[in-house]
Amino acid sequence: MINLVNTLATSAAQACEQIPDAVFNIVSLIIMAIQVVVPILLIIWGMIDFGKAVVGGDEDKIKAGQKIFIKRLIAAAIVFLVVTIVKLLVSLVGTVGGEGNAAADETTWGTCIEWFLNGKS
Image 1 (cartoon, rainbow, N blue to C red):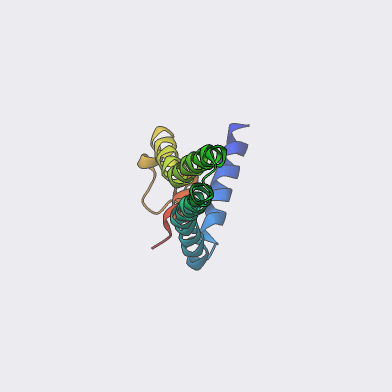
Image 2: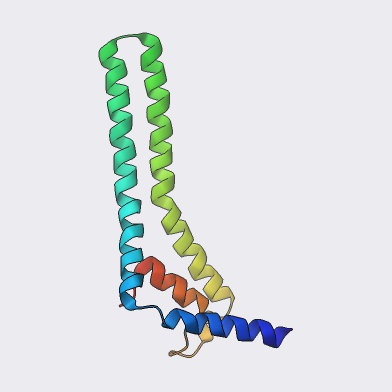
């Protein structure tokens, strides 16, 4: 059973080497764009909603606009931090799994995930 798991893990990690470098770089670029653009858009939409409520002058609409703005700020922070947290977890799992002891030319799952997150240079 253990040999089967090792064989599957090794085969899957080697399959990662078959993916062109451009794919890793494009996925990394998309992730970075999401990490930057989505929070900015959420903040802009929140400011627009809040601005509409303030211009309207209705106290209830202002409070509702504040709630929406705060929710969008929190969502923007979560979107921004998700990638950072995933990178941290991948590096921790790789270290705990003994990945740091792998041969320099050996591709592991952690390496493959890192290529998707940071691009392959």
